[in-house]
Image 1: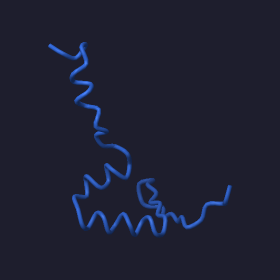
Image 2: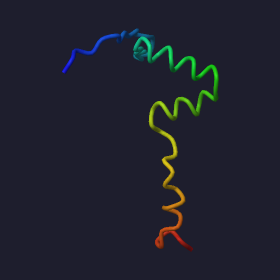
Image 3: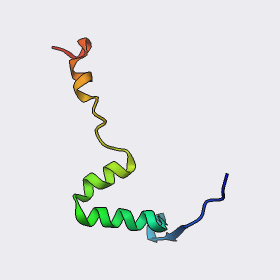
Image 4: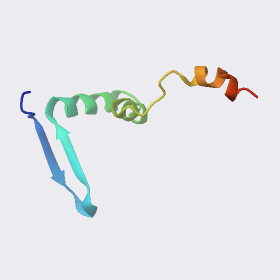
Length: 64
């Protein structure tokens, strides 16, 4: 497996750390500036609807 490269970090006050990764960070910033930042961050982190909500709603145990 190749050794990871292109990452950098910055320590901030309050014990937080900011991690960046070269071209991916640039791509993220471009997407955030061109679209809704909340939607872009949700998509990049994987924290967004996955399309199975309708299936779950129609499941017999969820019907009322």
